[in-house]
Image (tube, rainbow, N blue to C red):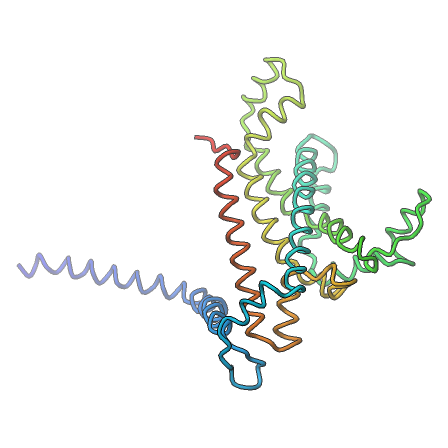
Amino acid sequence: MAIAVAPKRASKGLHRREWMQGYLFAAPFLIGFTVFVAFPMLYSIYLMFQKWDLLTPPVFVGLRNIQRAFTDELALKSLANSAFYTFLAVPFQMVISFTLAMALTQKIKLRSIYRAGFYLPIIIPVVATAVVWQRVFHPDFGILNEALGWFGIAPLKWLLDPYLAKPAFIFMSFWMIGRQMVIFIAGLGNIPVQLMEAAQIDGAGKLRTIFSITVPMMTPLIFYNMVIAIINSFQTFVPSLIMTDGGPQNETLFVVLNIYRNGFQFFNMGYASALAWQFFIIVVGFTIVQFYVSNRWVYYES
């Protein structure tokens, strides 16, 4: 009987050892996630109901911070700015990146160099990108105004004009479409050649083939890129902080910048926590809606 039990005990010991080794290898991530993500999120829930300036002990204020988050004009304006920026920038990003991907899957000379060139801005630090584009938009010495001058257009105060600041940020966002382009290129390479050949045999032209075969087959990647682009656009922070500091007239005061100001400039961590959770719920809720609606237009090959 002892002989029969021994293998079972050995099996349990091996399983326990493998379990311990697995958690040991995952420990750096688990510790980092707990310390830098999970604990701050849970602690921010506690701070939502407190008034805390980082120096004195927190004071319980009930729902005051939450009520203020839904009535503060600057908070509502920051949400409107982020929504305006996101819902105009993302569609253009999708169209441009998809068009580039289709162009760079054709047999053209130096195709690899073009692909690398469009992807290169992704690896440039965001701070460096913001500084460069601040120079590009300079009203007197900017290269953009100089190029417009060739067509007889007077210099524009891109980052100083309330009506042009957000369009300038939207234009700048096209600089970072390389990641979406690369994903689209990978997807285009996986479309079965037989479908394209069958469409050509049936007399479909290039445009008909694109809209009847290419686009439906690419909808899962279009959906993925769209979700990621919307989340990233809502989280825009560094460019607005460096280039305009939320100006002019708070037209580039995006949500994350407003949270940063209240938390680390005005030292109102309770209100900043309420704004952060308001933003979190909005983004997560909008993402859930996207997944729900995607069943109507995303084609998954069975």
